[in-house]
Image (tube, rainbow, N blue to C red):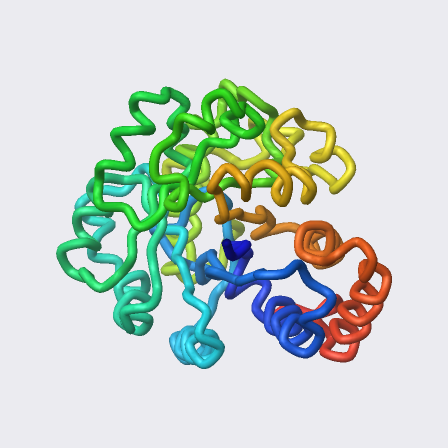
Length: 315
């Protein structure tokens, strides 16, 4: 059974992932046997439909074409995190998001969804996209989870609260359709997670509205009906590699190889769309590299990142 990983982010971490994929191709002996990069997920900045994380900045349409083309050459699917839970009918008309889907509509790529309204729109207008049910839905009831498998989803991303609950995991049908988040930063059982995603969705929409103005005044989210992202500060947004490993929901590489793969799960998601390159590199090395090659792989990866100026520069 292949070991499939879904990586962050094709836009924010574009150069970073291109370098990693080059190292993977050049030095396959560094990596676990059967390793496959099943997708790179994320969003282009100024995507109103984006959710889960606030993504700031602007990418022009030519850059969108370049990113889509280059990952298509690598035969690695993109999955768009269109997981904003506060989408309205008017939002479906968004020019940029529709442009992105038209540009990447090659039958290989996918979308990750939360909003039933947006999901129906994409299924109707862009039927060639594979559709993933997002962990942002916060489905923690096993009956509701089983109902999700009966819907037409290519993949269902499990809520991280199911991690390491093997009594529940063993009973899940269609294990091959499950994607498991291995390094969740959020606290287990977080009571504010759904509200946080709604706040993030409103903030993303506010940013997109602001970008359409002259931008001569500072961004004020409250003017656009969103709460300041710092007004209800969440300490788990500023996590580090060591802290996350202490969560009961954390999954180790040994767990993946010795427990999850034998059970029939083989799709795993590494979180990190908005974290720094050094931390993300450590996650990649931790999960995908054989322990005996860790030092060699780290030096090879970091040297290539520095030579490509990835660590010190953005897109």
